Image (cartoon, rainbow, N blue to C red; front, side):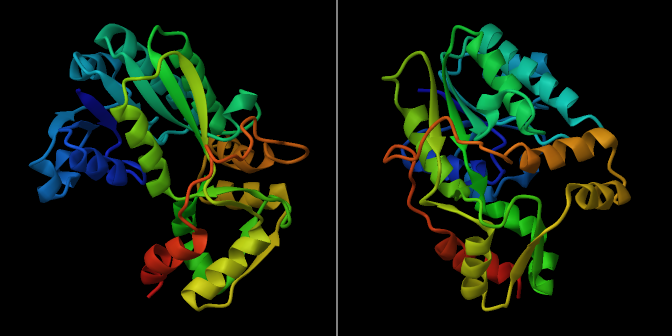
Length: 290
């Protein structure tokens, strides 16, 4: 079985690749900079130096691959949704022209809405593009990554997080390692066919008030959270030099969940994974705050 992994050094990929190696696979890694791989990993994998937005290059790289783990690259330009459109087209062309039979796509809770979810709309576009192919596809609709808190280290040190969602509103929080575990199982199995959605919701739905209590206890620092107006957040992001489209994309990932949003995939034994936020924060977040 030949398995290709996009974004192998990302939050999920860095766990997924060793899992596949331990299972006896020699995965093909798709990335721009092979030098980013650890030496012990580099000797156990095949590598294709490729830009995931370059559809023709991706097709050439994945030709002959049985299964593909696809991650849309994070947008780097002023128009995030335009870049996501390129990623969607690249994924679909790679699957069709490259002859890939099975795809596991790293999507998000909220992609089922298709529109009005900020950057998540870009993931929805890739879901649609992959569903239009003849490949068998599983969309992993993942919850909010624990690792998103790593982008707020300064705020955690200062003792105050600022968010757009109501402080009591629960949402799914998940460890990237748990996503990798689900992905590995699907990639290594050739028993499924068709188009499917599988939620990866972590162990519990948590509100921001619960999150700050858990983080404070785990890292040994006082921490609080406040809800700020949307316009304040927009002003802060614009002040950092972001374009209007970038601001819309980032803000929309929060405001899209306002109101009566309910995930299409309900929490169940299939979507619940084991790693707790407290365990992750103690092992992964606390050392970053030293």
